[in-house]
Image 1: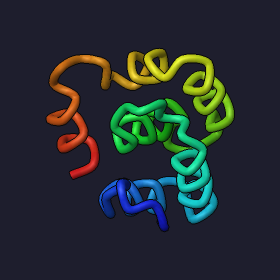
Image 2: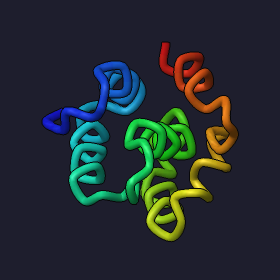
Image 3: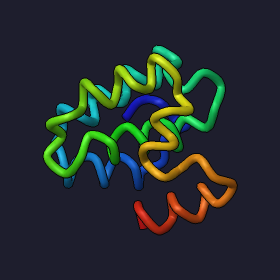
Length: 92
């Protein structure tokens, strides 16, 4: 991804679970500022997790994040203070 804030681990996770199309979409969302000043990795990972293994709910997850990024964090289990540990656990 061209966005330097997004670590390689999110790119690898997204590519292995959803393919290059999702990686491209995440890059666009990061550039749009969907994270609203929050940690971009946290918000984009939440979108990936809410979308599910097959990415079938991707548009729903993106819409949720656009409406209120906090809702997608809650849905993905990344809303609490331990979110950095959760990211490490989820993304390796």
